[in-house]
Structures are given as structure tokens and as C-alpha cells.
Length: 284
Length: 284
Image (cartoon, each protein chain N blue to C red):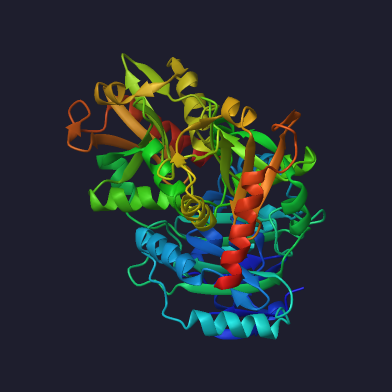
């Protein structure tokens, strides 16, 4: 279908157009795109699309390479023989390849991909006759998606950038009702009166594997564990708090922005669970 | 940092490991990942991670290739000389390369990428001393992100699959308060008493370029246009409705699931705006 694409300053045969597996677009969904319509060789509203792309690129901190977009897209349309039919052009911009890790490199080498393809489907008929649409519950979709480890990590990337700028190890998501869900790459636990609490998995929380293991370890120590809605005041009033993930295992939270959790030192239950976790790893 | 990766049934030098620019992981964020910890050459909780990956792959409809994961990851750790230090392993699964278009191919050729790298940062110190975290408003993040055309298109892909299975042209997102925001790849307008209504751009809606042009065209025709919260009953009670995007331009909505919009035929204002839009394209 597509014969030639434009990739990083060159026209390349589609079959040979490849990007590094370390491209942040692939690993984290760290990028943007624009879809434009081409009418018999003429691209429509290019400046407006580029303005939106540029504004979003500034928002994400991805430098947009300077290119002669009109000429490149014109050449692409010609090379793919799309001069006499209607076509679409997609511009994809990613933060480019980088070493693994959520926080972006200071000097990214962005990837620019431009693909021109024939317009799919019978749009003229849809425009003439009208169409049927269906309704999709947005909140349910968001909750369902939160349970899967999707490639889209832009919220986590932005969270990590915010955390780094505030000299914090992790950022915890809070909804408009002050409910805590999870961190960018970790689950949250708090301790109060010898009980362990963590936000419930079904709603907006990834069912973390370390989270599950910690719950099991705590129950094995006869510690009551509750999956319950937690709010910011619960965290600030906790006697201990910690976050968990496969990589960091169990990390004590001693401060939330400028507020201290209890005495701002790792608590005894957190340290006990750290020891038990390490012992479990050693046994495995 | 990383010397060798595993990509699609082969070990490949990291510098030469590439995927097609048509990989749906890159174009749409259409994929999943798992991050595992390796303790001195031993990967921890592999079965649990694979079970979660498998469950999410079933959810997305991506077939998970059969591989000897233990052997591959073991070999990868060895080849990258990570036997005597702590490391992380990331498994990335995408729906693989396909022709452009949101609806996935019936027989995908998934991409499997496995990368082993040294553990970054001083995690042991964080575990011992505890850390500071910061709070991140989730709802605001979601709203802010909705204004940018990010690569993450999994919600749109799922919406399009749902639409196709219900024989609908487009799926419209509805929140828990029955508010309509936009379609998977289009903006929404309704007509009532000669006035045009569309959900406001700042909240959860991509500022569509065609949306903006249609608003301007309508105002030029002295038609009052209101950016206002729209709910499902507003849509069902509309005299006309349509969706807009660069590719489809203006497409009349005549049915919402089993409900008809007015007489279930494209209305006069929709048709007028279609003509004006086409005239504008012809002039440009």
C-alpha cells in the first residue's frame, strides 16, 4: 500500500523503514502525531496541524526538527502516486531513542516519521447518507485500562519529571476527590494501628505483583490487610507508608511534599516486611 | 549499557535492533510490557509476570508467542554480563506491524522485545533511608493530556473494535455523568433550534482542527455556536448531529445505537456545512 515513507530526514522504502527498539515512542508511547487530509495532491491545513503539533511538542519537551514540511509531504504524495486521488498523511513525532528509564534524556534526538496512504473506506458514502454511532463509557474504559500495563506511559513520564523537579522519589496520583490510587511505577501502602491499607485493585490501580506478594507476606505475619479507598489525609496521618514494585521492592515513604510521615524515618512494620520480602527472594 | 537484546525469536546487538515504523506499538501504543527484577542472574516471579502479561494480551486480543522465557532471559542476562549484579528485565509485547488504520488486523504478527539492563539509581539507599514522594492530580493530568494528540491510542482502538462489532461508524465517549466528550477519532456537534452545540475544548476534548473550522464556517453563516456540556439526552433529542475530523470532514450521525436522530437522515444544516467546508477546501 505505502511505497515510500519519510523517516528522519530521508525518504526510505516502507519495507525497510525501521526505528530502534529503544525509541521512546515504542517503549513508552512518548510522542505525538497529526493526521492530515490530502486533496488530489494538495495537503489541507498544514500550518494549523503543525501549530498544534508544535504546541504539544513544547508541552512534552520534545524539540520539533525544522523541516520543509510542504516540500517533503508534496514529494511523498508524488512518490506514492497519490496525486490524483484523496489521501491521508500522518506525521509521527517521538522523543527518539534513549537509554532505558522514564525520565527523558536532556538532549533528545527525536524521530520524525511521515507516511502518506490512500484514504481508507467509503467516506463519501458516509458523508452523503449519514452513519450510526455507538456510545462508550469513558470512566469504565479508563478503569479497565488501568488494570493493564499498556505501553502508554506519558502520564508516568510527566509524573516522574514533576517528582524529579520537586526532589521526590515518586509521584502519587490523586483524583479530584483526594483519593490516592498508585504511584507512577509503584503501588502504595500505609500502616495505621498495626493494620496495613492499600487502595483496592479493581479501580484505577494496576494489580502489582509486588503489591500482591506484600499483602501475602503481611497476612502470613498475622497482620490485618485492607484493600480500601485511601485519601491524602489518611496518608499524612499514617504511622508508616511505603511504595512497592518489582524493581524497588519496598521503599519507605517518609515525606509527602513538605509533610512528614510520623517521625520521617522508616517504621518497624515496613522494615519487617522488607526483611521478609528479601528472605522470600532468597528462598525462591 | 545494553549489549544484546532479544527481538522476535533472535538475539540481536542492541545497536542494530529495530522494528518496522508500521509497528502498532510505535504508531498507537498498541501493546503491553512487564518489568522484572533479576537477582544475581535469577529472574524473580517470572510466572506471575507472564500470567499478567498473558491476561492483558487476551484482553487486547494480541496472541502471546510461545517462547522458552526462562531460557531466553537467562541467556540475555549472561550475554549482558549481569550475572553478579542486580538487574531489570523488560518484556515488551506489541500487536506488531500492520497496514495503517485503528482496527487491528485479524492475524497480527506480534513483536516481542526483551531487554536486560543494570538496575538504575541507588535503590538500596532508598530502601534503607526512605524517600520523599509528591502528589500529582490525576484528573487534571487526564484533562491536560486529552488536549494533546499522544501516541497512546488503545482507548480509541478498543472503541473502534466495539463500534465495528456493533456495526457503527464511530464510538462516542460518555462519562459517568452521561456527558459526551468526543469520538475515538472525531469531534461531535449537534444542532437544535438552528443553534450548533459542541462539547467545550478545554475539558477532555482534543481541540480538533476540523472542529475549529466548522465553528468558524457556522459563525460565518450567522449560525449561533455554543461550546457547552452535552449529555446523551441532548444528542438523542437533537434535530441533527454530525462528527468531524480532517479525514472524514463532516459525517452526519443519523443513529445512536438503536435510537434515531430526528428522521434518521442527514439534516439541512449538516448538508449546508458540508458544502461550505468543501468550498473552503476548494478555495485553499
